[in-house]
Amino acid sequence: MESLLNLWHASGIYNITPGQIVMILVGMLLLFLAIRKNFEPLLLVPIGFGGIMANIPEAGLAFSAVENALNLGGPEVIASIADALGVSSADPAALKDAYVNSSAKAHTAAIYAANDAGYSNGMMYNFYSVAIASGVAPLLIFMGVGAMTDFGPLLANPKTLFLGAAAQFGIFATVLGAVGLSTLGLMDFTVQDAAAIGIIGGADGPTAIYVASLLAPDLLGAIAVAAYSYMALVPLIQPPIMRALTSEAERKIAMVQLRHVSKSEKVMFPIVLLILVAMLLPDAAPLLGMFCFGNLMRECGVVDRLSDTAQNALINIVTIFLGLSVGSKLSAEAFLDVETLGILLLGIVAFGIGTAAGVLMAKLMNNLQGGNSINPLIGSAGVSAVPMAARVSNKLGLESNSQNFLLMHAMGPNVAGVIGSAVAAGVMIKFVG
Amino acid sequence: MDNLMSEGLNLMVFGMGFVFVFLTLLVIATGFMSKFANKFAPEPAPQAAKPAPRAAAPAASAGNDEVVAVISAAVHHHRNK
Image (cartoon, rainbow over all chains, first blue to last red; front, side):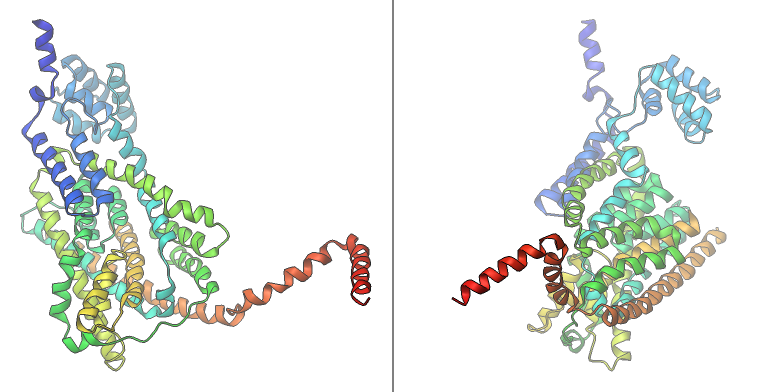
């Protein structure tokens, strides 16, 4: 009877909290969206599954050794950790705060105390430390994206870089929105949080995760989920905004064929970009450096094997770990919060403003150049979701004029948007990091 | 609280300004780069380079010069028969 009772007390059903039930349902919702609705399945399947695993009661997969000891350990374990931290409290929540804010020495002592009591880091906590806390996974993904990116359309028409710049307005407008919500007392975001939330508007998953891991690790789960969900929703969010801001005549504008871009230009471009980053904004160097490296491997033509690995095998491996690590941040206490709602709301606003700013910039450039050379529909591709945003531009162009193929023209602002959002990320890290 | 708001405004003005300055410089740098590339390394270059290695390959094996000369003489002789 005694052992039967023990088994019952160790079971998931006995220990599960309402928050964990809700988060497991959220994880299943993400899986449903990915599998049935085809929303960014490559990311949302690992994230959703990771979210479910992170909320398995008693397993503590998403927690560090000390957190596990505080959650699961008896009074004597908690006392030994309190002793290691030099705190007299016996309340696990207070001890967690003390642990987070402790000096490196007390921090290490607490970890040893937890290890002595037989507790270790959860598997997903380890994934998170290796993949995201260290910054490795988003950067490797950025390298893969660089290896997949063809800068040809951008080099043929460098002015489209302005469209990529304009679309970043969504990022900064959202920062203001998040700060405004805090000022009004509706939410509680610091400037760092606001900056990390704004990056969702760049529509660039790895950049958003990279910035969030540096500026607001607590919000990372919500930010990553918002960023990837909205990237999947690009074909739904953008067209109404694009239609509202352009006239039928503007949508009909056919653009001239892009000039041929030589191989030497493509080889030199990543190096020029890297030098510019090194000179002006070293804080963006990790992101843009890896991006340029990936692109150089692609274009130089002598390391095809490396380029092939970066854009296929490696990016797939990293995506698995990145997704599971993001899932580990979907714990009930961090996610079930009014701030998550704020993040989801601000994210979609960021997206909309970015799209609008890109289209308006394209209209302005078109008017400055005589009104018949730039189709404003390509402006919306300045948000970086590659190549989805460019496809949306192409689709709307074809609706108005069945002979008007805008895809290659929209790829220019699209890859410019990747550069733009990485630069914006560098600025954020520099100013508020 | 107002402090937070002004911090946000600052970030927006500086950030957006910086993004534009950076990408403007990139437009200029790209323009220069394209001019430079097309002037000093024009596209047909790789095609022109192709025959060169072929001509260079026999020259590399300088020790075989005699053999080549003998064989070509033999072929020549054979053809003229």
